[in-house]
Length: 175
Ligand SMILES: Nc1ncnc2c1ncn2[C@@H]1O[C@H](COP(=O)(O)OP(=O)(O)O)[C@@H](O)[C@H]1O
Image 1 (tube, rainbow, N blue to C red):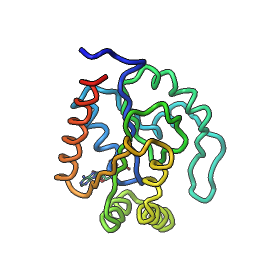
Image 2: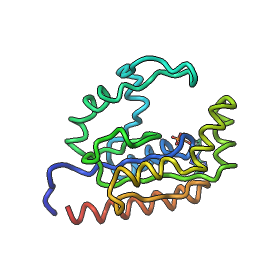
Image 3: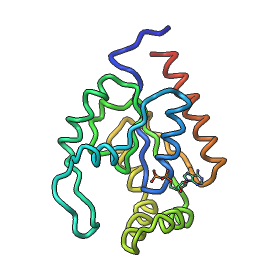
Image 4: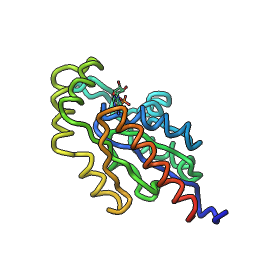
């Protein structure tokens, strides 16, 4: 076996809410035996909040406490992290970053089904139109580790899983 470097593989799955991160992340974790972490769930379980956003009617993430909480786990490696933003994380955490993308009309329907109000729907669809998260990822990580994946249909999901698994196998063979 190739030598384990400082730690095991860490994958970030990011993208606008509704692009399918948790669906893909949870399935991927099962198939390749990594730990799946939804950052929103960790924040809620550990109450890693700092105030309340009246406009969006949601608690504000305490980023410093979140980083402190996750750092030991990330140093160990073997994680798939799911979050709808990526500029808060230390660059050193991730070996590869996947940015999921969804067509605006499909995304709108998914978020409407989720019960988002008009403002939240509009803001999230705008976020996707302006490819905000993709730009964030490209700005925060080395170009060659950032991959954009279209995720509109169940067929896309299966293709994406296969692509990621191939990449992971390659990574494991060379690290
Ligand atoms: N590739 C896909 N094709 C069709 N529907 C999908 C796909 N990926 C996710 N979905 C659906 O879209 C909705 C949002 O997916 P979810 O994984 O919760 O997104 P996120 O974690 O990015 O907010 C869910 O109802 C899920 O079943």
